Image (cartoon, rainbow, N blue to C red; front, side, top):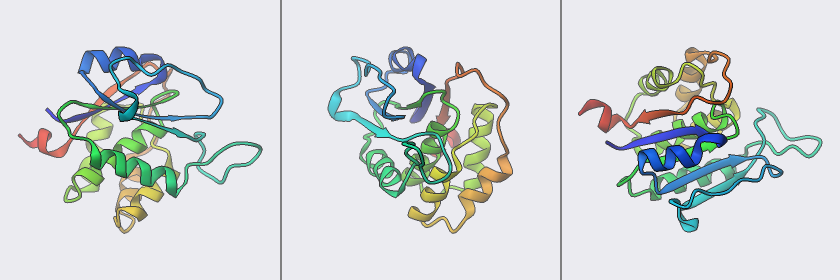
Length: 176
């Protein structure tokens, strides 16, 4: 089954091995150091440096921007889907679920944003996708505000302790 695995930093090695992931997107603040799991080859690892904020960066914080989201889209569309794609951030609650939504829509543009948001909420009661990433993804993927509205309608997730990885099945896998 083709799927995107979303995880907090503390669980990336475990999730990569458990799900057989060979490609990974990391959305981390520049000062956060970590080790790429050995099962993920360096050339199939995208590291994006950004903070989990929904406004322009100040005081050294880096807001997600169009370049970051374009790289998510390009990396996802270059993914061969023979093994799950692992996407992570610090807690696995905001940046990585937003990136998973953008990646899923880039891969399957004919799907409904509402259905995708519903699948995300079913997969994770904790996900609260970063709205800045969602807004930029909506624009770059020409979703005409539908992704933004679907995420707003989904609402904020329950409080999380950063220890709740989840799997977002892609539409093809979900319907087969």
